[in-house]
Image (cartoon, rainbow, N blue to C red; front, side, top):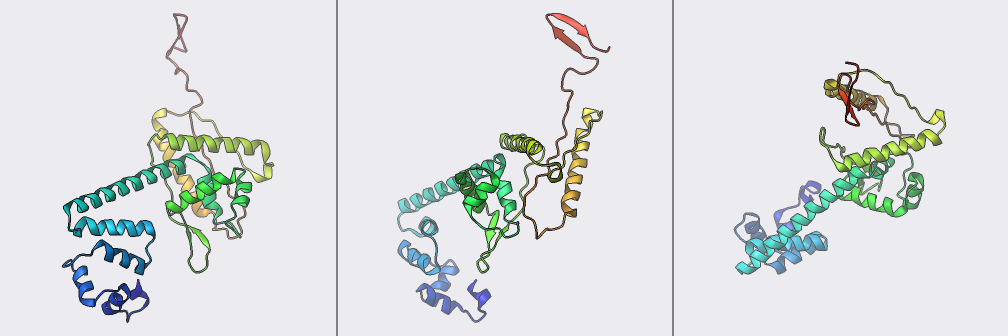
Length: 267
């Protein structure tokens, strides 16, 4: 990074900034020498690592270069425990992200005109507790889904979020239930000019459900691509397409069982 911002920055200058001789730094970078934990801590401070990152860096050093085999094993155990904790945290974050609607709404609010990170105001707009907004925001940060420019301090969204296609997930089911509840509330609350609800009912062979899904996904992509990047946006909307069987009972030509009496239906 320092070389990228200053082409004149040399190995000698870097060694000086780290408090090492240039020859030793060169040997370390080539893998000919290692670091002690004490030196690793000093290096961490020089390059501005956080306390948790410093601890991890020192464990990485100890796992390879500690003089005692016991210390090397203990360091490797701490590294493995940290890795598991990180993966577990990400797994929980992923589940929460998919199962609670406010994460997606909050992420899109970052793109609104005059967005300001005011948790009380955001909670009022979303009509949920401020605590839930704060938790959702921290989760978005951990998953690198929102980003603040270090210079302008402006917030922006990072990466797209896609759920696994064709997989049954309790988290995804919870999310869709919540969005259906939000749609129901909008139907009763919002004036016609501020919402659009439409549906059709058609006959179809259930074997063509994957084909129907492909057509709906194609429409979704077209819908999203044709909407302009509205710099005047003041609200977040949800497009919720639901295509499902309204005749899930026994099929035509099948039999019904009622009080041990078999009844033929349209056969």
